[in-house]
Amino acid sequence: MKSIRSRVVQTFMFVAASLVAGLSSGNTGAPSFLRADGHFIVNEQGDKVLLRGMGLGGWMLQEGYMLKLGNLGQQHVIRAKFEALAGKAASDEFYNAWLANHTTKADIDAMAQWGFNSVRLPMHFNLYTLPIEQEPVVGQNTWLDQGFVMTDQLIAWAKANNMYVILDLHAAPGGQGNDFAISDRNPNLPSLWQSEANQQKMIALWRKLAQRYANEPTVGAYDIINEPNWGFENAADKNGCKETKNAPLKKLLQDVTQAIREVDNKHIVIIEGNCWGNNYSGVLPLSDNAEANKNLVLSFHKYWNNNTVGDISGHLALREKYNMPIWLGESGENSNLWFTDAIQLVESQGIGWAWWPLKKLGFNNPLEIKPNADYWKVVDYLTGKGEKPSAAVAKKALLQLAEDIRFEKNQFHPEVIDAMFRQPYSYTSVPFKNHRIKKSGGTVLAVDFDMGRSGVAYWDVDSANYHVSTGKERTLWNRGTTYRNEGVDIEFDATKKSYVVTHFEAGEWLDYTVQVDKAGTYELAAVVKAPNGDGKMSVSVNNQNLNADVNVPASQNYQSVTISSVKLLQGANRLRFYSKSGAYNLHSLVLHP
Image 1: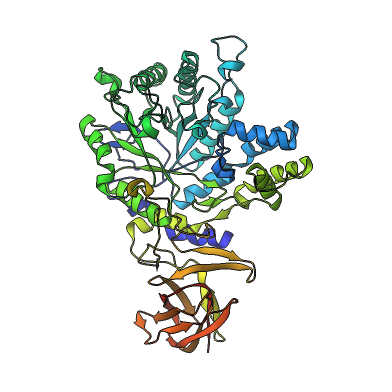
Image 2 (image 1 turned 180 degrees about the horizontal axis):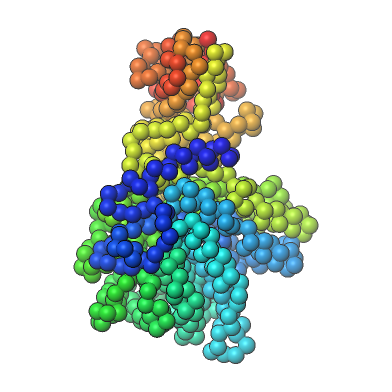
């Protein structure tokens, strides 16, 4: 893993200085206070700063999908299930270890090396203060050290890497919407919008944070409420997407901003609209006082839609109308193709971004948590698919999971980083792995095709999820949801004890860069498995098509099928493997003299 990390870091180090002319995006030089200046975020020297960040989702606030727990969405529900299964002491031990291990200095150091210049911290209020229901004195605030200490630590790690930290209140007191999981909301208790006490606690928390970090330039901004989603005018409009006034939201944003400004006039305040940060009807301008509208940034969130200027035109119009910067405060959870297109889109408009999340039990993020076998027993039981494990097994599984989340245990996805930093500005591909063909030949695993854009390094029929724009069902771009995040379908094959390309369909192709020790003629074969005999495949070498379509015979087991003799040059050669018809599995390409 270390060699892969080193190679990817070397590939991307040039990016920060060259991506967007006139915008500073690298993490060189000590952070200085950021501020809003017209359409842009600038530093103290007046240089435009393009924030490229990652949200630390799952650290202070878990969501069920990140743990493969399906409909067990809210953290308090998950915690109760773990406690019932393994016992309170084991559950408490797990959560203490989770908070200690999920994000460490190693994670932030790696992010800086990959090219990120900022990190968004999704905060759970209950790490900083007690819920109103637990306050010993009604109306007062009991402050808890844990959240502040964790935040201080993250800021120190970021400062050492010349990165910014965006503080984001992800779980507000009471919960800020009807999407329960994102704020750990308990619908049996008053929400943020149903309780003046919850609102006052949120205001007090932001005043406390602003006091603490007023003179800390590493803190880039205060993102004061994540994705409010509430129907104020019409309860049937559960997520506030049709809201036209948003009066309670505007009032709370005003009150929080005023509380911050009473102790801190240096930091940017980021505001988010209703409907998961996208409905600003009635919210802007935030104040009738022009002075109060200074140093504000508008955040929008973007998921599962198309990546054209038209898709963000409403946000661009708000930037123009109110002469304020806009920031893509959260996006991700899609394929590499979608990542590349979305980042290229927003950066072309001078807009920074924060992706989501850094890690989870899933493949479409820079780091993937690979859980232990016993944890899957816990998952199967809690999702109704298996028998109840013993308390001892559950405890062992959870405590091991708390170790599995550490950076050094995570699976690194270099292709995700490549899609985010290199591919938005390059129509070339680079090797995913070093494929060396010795004088005696060599084997290339099919799943290790080159990294690059769809249509450059590979082509697959389904390469991204656009269901918000299309209105159709979600698309699984990689049906196996494993190993890599491109559109290519990949699964683990127990018989081969390796990952294989599956559902390789007509029109799809894969590129491989191979390093050949000795020029010459080599026999090329493919190791394939096909449900029936209607498949055909072909290969091009160094952009020269071989004049042969080879049948893929039906077989229940993998077999080697000779394709052709190929002439390879010494050094780098490019092989492009085509599926001409059928749908079959591809394990590897084999070359021998």
